[in-house]
Image (cartoon, rainbow, N blue to C red):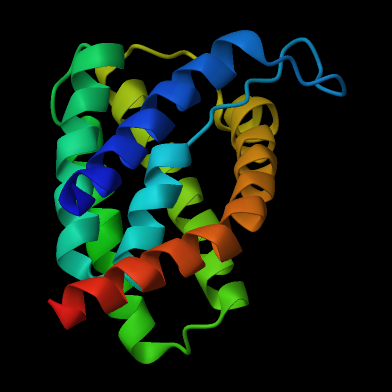
Length: 172
């Protein structure tokens, strides 16, 4: 039963990401601003840091593919990005000290990299006409603000939960 808790948790976060974007209105948001929740990426990065790289990359691959299938007409954009970002964060954590501020910084940096990556792909294939300035002010900054707040709220409960799972796995 314990081995199903983590996949169901990430699936719940995947579904809540969609519900959040459709149902939650942010009162101080401008009409043109776009807030994109990246809760699954945050979770995959926390899995990478507090559990292990393999879990983070596997969940990144699975839920990146699921994200591509559900939301995007091009398969592989998020599949590749989530797994690579989890891998890069795991490599960075070997160099940097693993305190909460470093993890938050790497999470926010990863979200920014993901947003630029997705914008670049969409710009190259011609599916967006948004200028870089408009992208930065209307999409990137609001997305980083929203996800920073969520990451700050989730880091300690997720750290405690994932550390507990890691200890249970090492006992078995």
